[in-house]
Amino acid sequence: MPFKIIRQDITKMKVDAIVNAANTELKMGGGVCGAIFKSAGTDQLQVACDALAPIKTGETVITPGFDLDAKFIIHAAGPIYREWSKEENERLLRSAYLSSLEIAAEHGLESIAFPLISSGIYGYPKDEALRVASSTIQEFLLNHELEVTLVVFDKSSFEISSDRIDSVERYIDDHYVETHSDLRRETRMVELHEMSRVEEKSLKSSSLEDLIGNLDEPFSRMLMRLIDTKGMTDVDVYKRANIDRRLFSKIRSVEGYMPSKRTAIALAIALELKLEETDELLEWAGYALSHAVKFDVIIEYFIINGMYDVYEINQVLFQYDQPLLGS
Image (cartoon, rainbow, N blue to C red; front, side, top):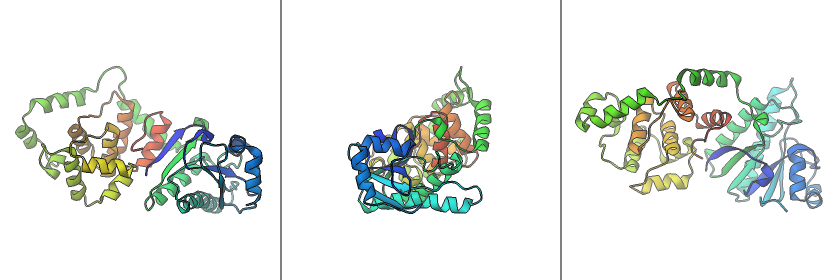
């Protein structure tokens, strides 16, 4: 199942469970915790929590969701950030996320929504809190099927590395064209349409066509051949692409099915295709990257720099209010 980031009020999430950034006494607090208590019904939730309190930092317990759309609330006690104890901070924060995911799996839940735990009044630096959350969730999803959403209320509660943003910003400044189409890609597309298949094949060296052969193959069959060529498994690909297993199964089994552009790009990222190979895969599905589209420029930045972590890409896309890959 995919991992996505959205801007939303976590109390409005229609998922199996939402996670409460709780204190160890499981008392109603401020911020996310206070909002969850109020939306669930303060008195009834407090009674349920009192029966389970106290818990240790890094631990979790589960209660009914009461008046929420979510069926359950998982209460996770994150650490108060201590500058002199960074390793312990991270261990406890990872434990809060991992315990939440494990308790969701134990209860047979299919979807869970997290806030950015400890990043509010507990003082955990937001970029570090995001790194810990993202890496812990990614590791868990390698071996589990669970739909995970990281919910942030506004941009002020979400930060990523300033070095990464600066680098992406420079690339956008150099390549993003707002007022006219990308002439390089437009010219290339015209040339491709004018060339015969034989001429096109003779001009390409080390291309996707060279790897997988027949241009008349359906996208699904071509994708399976490419996965085999790369020595990967279906599970490797749909998890690395952040694609729902059911969607991947549809792409695989329905011969005439064409994925959306975002899904095709996510597959290219999962397969670690170079830019030229990505261009060809997209052409196969009827799409192209363009410097007139900011989303496309950001994708190109990551590909040409050989960075194929779909979760890191999605963090940057989210920062620029762009649609995310896969999910």
